[in-house]
Amino acid sequence: MLPLIVQVLLQKINLRYLAFLIIAFNTAVVPGQKAVFSVKYKTIKFPPTQEGEVLKFSYEVKNTGKAPLEIYSSETECACTEVILPKDQILPGDFGIIKVIFDTKGKYYSQNRLIYLNTNSRRKKELVRFKVFVIPSPERELENEP
Image (cartoon, rainbow, N blue to C red; front, top):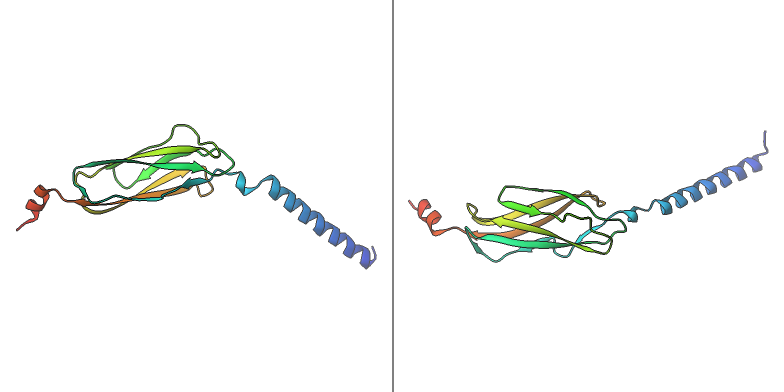
């Protein structure tokens, strides 16, 4: 049996060694080695728009991480919203464009549309949105009168 003082010293050395390994591992595999999805405006607001118009706009995405950003796919709430994703990876420090086409035909009043983007970023699923008040067409207003 080792004297008590030697056992305590060995435990402290083991704890220091373990702490060193944890710190070394964390610096080698830093969470910052991921791609980071960054967009200046996550929500785009449009002025009131007549029903039937098609809105075309885009989000400028910057990769502020240290690994290439990939946007695999998108999910929208309805077929009225088409999303065109960048085909190539977005390298660290570079920008990519996500194009959106929203058809207001058959849509009216307040529209708050969410676009979910499946990526290799830290969050995996990123969110952007747009809002617009769609003014019903005169024909629709005539249909609703008694």
